[in-house]
Length: 379
Image 1 (cartoon, rainbow, N blue to C red):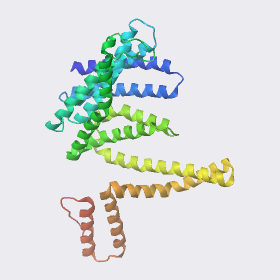
Image 2: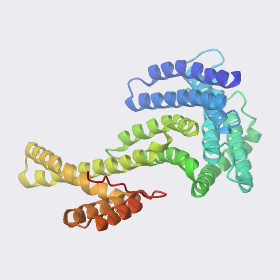
Image 3: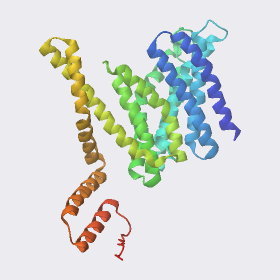
Image 4: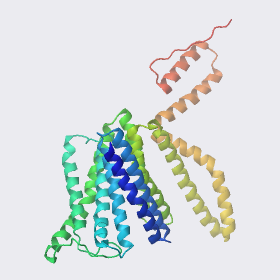
């Protein structure tokens, strides 16, 4: 199993100097530095996780897709950083490689993960057409970027493989076609993941929950960051970190590490995410209203802070109940059943009725295969 380790080493060896060069070039732009850190973590996570998965489960194509992502993106970022830091020998070729390698690695690996996770196989034979179309789209995107006659990178170096002017229209047509097809192909790949999730049971469903949970954070956060506003930068950071964690999440799900904790993680994320949004919105609204009423910003901040502090506990209780009622109905119904049983327990004096009631509550809340109640006899 030397090939997985070799590919992982290529990705790691490429991304570390690329991260240093990009950090120097991006200074002092905070967003660019964070983006550099996020993509560095993505390459390290993809390379290391891909090596573990491909070594332990060599027949699973997900591990090899992660290795391709780590090696391709790492080498591409190193080439781009080298070209941008120039002038240097062969910087045109470095800019050329940095123009198409990251594109192919990201596009191809994302589509492969969506269609092949978690067992490395397509949902069914019917999805082979989508897989072939996606592969063709990735290949066309790579060809278009490799032959793009436009100046490459921020250094605007000429493309050493640019075709004569007569073929300009053909290359631009390829680029235009891939730009149009990229989103539909990724949506089709995501649709296969949805189909797989709906058909899944047991362990596979838990694996898919881990992966889709992280992917949902990436999508929502990066979508929010695309809209200008006070939360755009924070959402970008969260989305980038979630993207960097996606290969690790996929690997842990495949290797089944702490697999059964996913429902607890999702529940807490929903509760505290909604709580944070509620308290933040309430705080901003109170600052605005109190500030307009009294005309003093310091008093408005103090009053709003105290109000939000007092709102924390009741808001948490209500949001937790709402999440359980909407997404975890079985837990919510069990809590109501236990609460009702506690009320009856205070008034019930008939031992046989109490025993029957207790058995019924256990069956309803725990749903065991059988229920046996043992009562110690009095001596």
